[in-house]
Length: 253
Image (cartoon, rainbow, N blue to C red; front, side, top):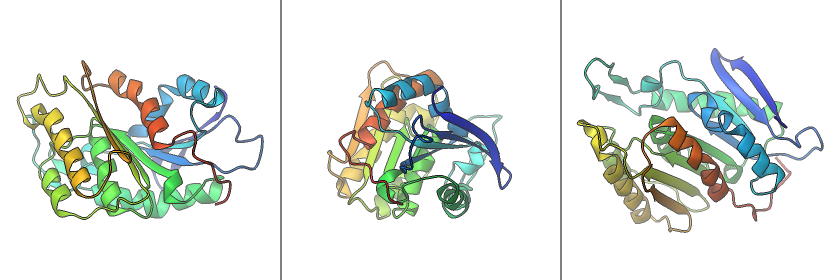
């Protein structure tokens, strides 16, 4: 590993912070990507990401991974009944979780590390329910997150498509990346069987709300399924699209 990985705690939450290879070489500031599920999306493909950074195929980032206490509660925007027998209901604590991230954790990260604080250089990203709560954050905090990645987002979640249709979303100056595997949901007999269709519908809503295809990308990966290995393959591509290498990195906060 060329960069620095910091495992610590903040307000009782376990967080994982990654500082890029050149962080200690100069005084430049860096864009920040906040990730759910402990940040496994960057931790489990870190060698590939670092190689891309060193080869100038990817911008250097500060990554911040937040480990959930109960992901079904924290990554759900409102209460919903369980969709599988034997599993707990969804607690609907998404707004509280995002408020913690925006009002507590982000100010701490901005104060302690050399971050670029504006929305254009602040991303939120996740997969599955992590993709769902990332999209929810795009609606709740347009002045914070200017880059959003929803990898295989759980848009089957009860009421979320209706929420997207009724709620306003800021689109100017923002980039949203969405994707889904063509095989996702094919073996399910609950709401998850609609994974592909619901992702397509969510994308269509964003276009209707004013996003152009230049700033809102949706990719269907042929043969892709819903799982860790598939998410990891797509994460570097999501970063490249959200932060084009041609973008000029501002060193000011």
